[in-house]
Image 1 (cartoon, chains in turn blue, orange):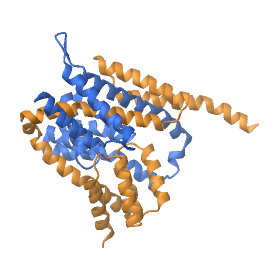
Image 2 (cartoon, chains in turn yellow, purple):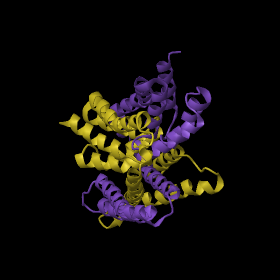
Image 3 (cartoon, helix red, strand yellow):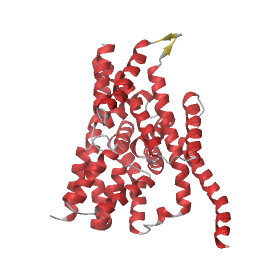
Image 4 (cartoon, chains in turn brown, orange):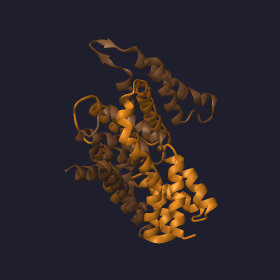
Length: 185
Length: 191
């Protein structure tokens, strides 16, 4: 049943998404692709939309996936599921056991979980760049995606040399949209 | 003003005006809850950040739950969390109804060809920032490397292993190493 799948899928995301929004993206990809809810392409578009609209990215993605699969009910269920674990855990920690997080066993568990999450996010970023930047078809390599990847990477990382904080993610998305229209148009 | 209503409106405002989620929100939450409303102290705010980093889920939700609970118990934490989610829920729900049609417009689909590339760059950047903040010790480095290698294989081939399984394995290995090391340390200290 789709509603139950949505609930369990996003509950898993909510339980394991350490490291904020970008930590959740590999998990959401995992769940969404394995159930076949959205194509990889559509999900990538939606990550950009979630980044450019207000609110936590994880919650935005859950709302969107839920809505695309089962309308308003689906979006409510998915959003509830992604928020529920952190709501309950923070409530337990603040209400009952302020010291639980200092427990040496929990600390040891977290020392394994967090670096693992970093490795997963790193691999996800690199494979997305490789997949979208180096498009091969019939032994023919397309030059436009490669040029855009190099150009956008240079703009984003290069801007930090001139301004302390560089350009914001939303500005990068705007620049990339304009570049897409100019190069493919 | 009623505290619950105040919590709801304040967090709805934060939810409506912070883009990009995560750490971008912490500044605004601190501004509202510490400086303006004085619901929590600066020290408590630091405490929340630590809790948020050690618990899963959106950081903004963690903050809203904590502040809401401190001010109005369970009802407060529910209201604050609901306020945090509601604005973006409405916006994304509206977008989800017309995004498919929107993408059929030629120049918008071209724009998304570019945006697709930007998303990869943003995710890579997030990972690099997390790496920079990580403890510079051999153990975390080995875990990062193993997780990275495993995830690259999963992404590039058709092997399907859930990333949650990878995380659980890493957590268990770390816990196991801790448990087998611990008695030795304890015995040493006891004598």
